[in-house]
Figure 1 (cartoon, rainbow over the protein chains, first blue to last red):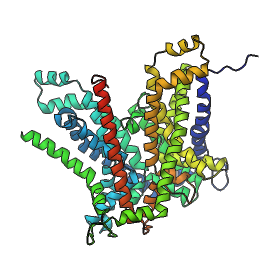
Figure 2 (figure 1 turned 90 degrees about the vertical axis):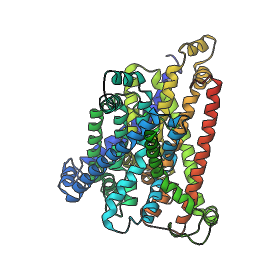
Figure 3 (figure 1 turned 90 degrees about the horizontal axis):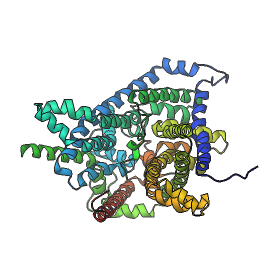
Length: 271
Length: 268
């Protein structure tokens, strides 16, 4: 028998073991708990039936979608012109302007949300309960805006100037060039921005808990509730699994799973 | 001219939205009023004194920094091993491992958080510092892999073979040839890991021991759960310091980067 000789690829073995134990196995556990009856311990769909027959849960699901879609659309509407101006005019000559836009990304997310609460408080936005939704929406747009600007800027900045000139030469007006050339060519940046905002706004309950005055429940909060308050791991896992299915569906639609640099978005441009 | 006016106006408007809350906090950190918006008397450093004399807050800050540092070191070692191991594996192995590496990035943080908590409970060490470390490593290691892999691609393939031909053992070749070549990638992966760890709330809250607090969990408890302790105003001072430190770090980094650029004839 030959002695085990060290080779570079052997470094992947502890890595694969770590991932098997802490990435794959946990997901299998979630699936196992989701399909287990909390009382009998047998295989059942009861957790899913419970979820889809509860009005409170369906309201939270609807609220998550509403907040996520509104936040994404508003972020894109604010970010696209900003990214366009930064990328295509000389306002960002020395890179300082872009830096100013992405600098908030380094400040603790919870601290930023707390700062927004103080500002909204000062503006009198916490005087009535009807403001909970709008406050949460403002907070979410505020928190995710830098993450939307960066990917769109990156794409627009690389855009070939000749293509835009060709469009003008061929008789397109400025508006036509924007909608028929610039926006279609910046789709990768837009898609990347959407995936950065859509999922966290549905699941990260930091903003809705801080700014929602207890009136805004999103799907992430439901999971937290089942685990930390109700101690019902099965129901919590079932909601997590519904979320996993949604994530997987989004991945297929946006084709991100195959893209090599898909992880770029969250931390890539940061340092 | 008008167009330029509107463009600049728009940019400054968006920036005002992004910075208004932060500036408000910073201004009110130099005043000892309990509530923002009620300016009491005069400028003062009381909140800064309170920050540095509150043992709760100081423990929290130290906890956060130590956790970020230790978990990022582990992540960096693990991620670098993974990146090198995957890069030199067979295509099918590489692609499978690569897909699994993406899972924590794509997955919702809450799902990662509860599943890590489930596993840690199952392995019977419950919510301890170990589970917290594991949670943060899961959150950050994919970003180390992502930063090291491009450097491996750029590296000259023959360097490693040359080292072996010249009599280096594979271990020596790894530490004397491959690691130095990919060091910039390892370093930027480490920095991203630190940033993400400092920022995290959800994974922390599900894996931490009950009495342990990071800045995120402390602030969240104060602002969202309504437990406004006497230390809350001092958080303004803390935010202002964090903000100042980040600005200084970025300026230093940019100065170094632009000097480096000038040296390399403007090439990145």
